[in-house]
Length: 135
Image (cartoon, rainbow, N blue to C red; front, side, top):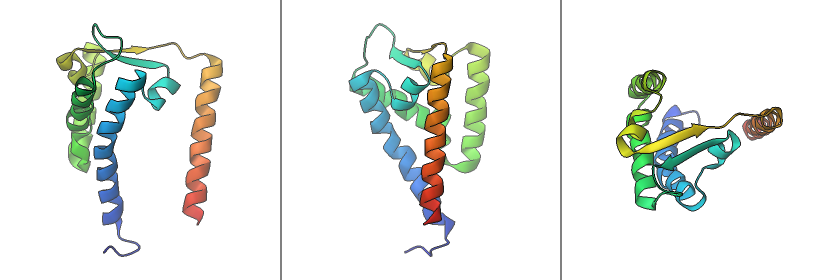
């Protein structure tokens, strides 16, 4: 369907990945109270007044992040939504979707050991991408 060097397939795969992220993130928040990336960086996201959110609340938050944060993954739109989200976060201390939906985000202090773990994960990820692209 797509030529081997056609970037359309890559863009389509990127959009599908963002959409697939919604139920994955919601499941992780519901089942574990965090996602792998948030756990790595010591970030806790929780619905106010709940130890762990209901799946429906988590799916609403993830969908709102996809819409209001990522701009549905549309390249030019996402540039503006990401910038707007960053500005809102710096000015008000919370992302618009978290304030609107009643979520809190807590960033724990990162110890030197945690930083080494983060660097290790990034190095491993880069290594995997190099190997995949080499084949």
